[in-house]
Amino acid sequence: MRKGRRFTPQLFEKWFQQGRGSGTYASYEPLHQVTRADPGSRGTSSFLPANGASSHGHRLSMNETIFGALASMVRFKDDERWQFPLAWHPHLDELAAYHEPGLGAYFPGTIEIAKSLGIRHPTIRDGKKTSLWPMTTDLVVTLRPPLERRQLLPLSSKDKPFRELSPRDRSKLAIDAEYWNLQSHPWLLITPETYSHHYALAVLGAFNWIKNSPAESDEQCKATAEIVRSISGRTFTTSFGSIGQELKCDPARAKTLFWQTVWRGLLPIDITLSHWLPNPVRIISQEAFCDANPILARRSAWPS
Picture 1 (cartoon, rainbow, N blue to C red):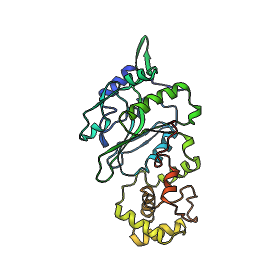
Picture 2 (picture 1 turned 135 degrees about the horizontal axis):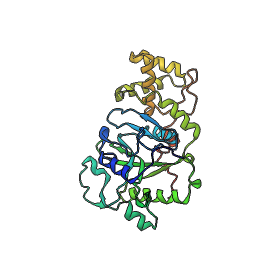
Picture 3 (picture 1 turned 135 degrees about the vertical axis):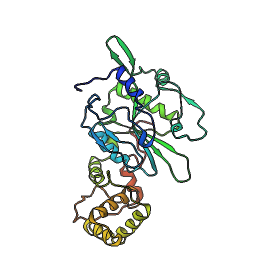
């Protein structure tokens, strides 16, 4: 149960006037945030400072923290927008925020989509007044592959398997899915059945080394991958030492370089193996590396 401040139509109106749910890169403000003035979340919340061009990260539950760590491994990520509000009314493709050309068509908002699906749109009551609840997608990742236009990868998550979700939760997810599918953006639903819990915990542990670190250059990461591959099968201790010696950096930066190289897919390793320093680094195929992460594998719990 949430305690303290409650959601009201007036609160949402205030947030929209403040610019929440709009902008791109560092100027983007999530609709729901981790602040003292926001209604409390049901889970353990956390806050990540802005990193590079991306906005601050507001994680409303441990599930979102795991989900965010998995999403951080996506290649060609150009931007990420958490707690992204879906438009009620007809709107341009959500790529229009980046001024991509050729986006003149309008798409249905959640009101029309709910009606077409025969689903009651979520609402919020304040006394006798009933207003529409602004629906959100947990995370919208913007991809920018080399020499290609930007792409959107909308992601929603739940902390329980799909089969355990209530009919009402499934109906709201149906609106979320249709909103993005109509724009031809591949929406994914990430739930615990789409990945190994052991894998998720290992990703979280490794992610701690890089989440607040400046991005290393591609050249440095490629050099790191070559160093580790040249001593394939050696321990984490040996790998970190070799990186530091070859690239002339301190141990902390050597670890950061190692994990950033893994995160970029340049050094596919079995992350589920213990990260204890005396243990060996096991290099695996790119296919196996991607398959372990449901977002990299584009694996969704939503029935196709």
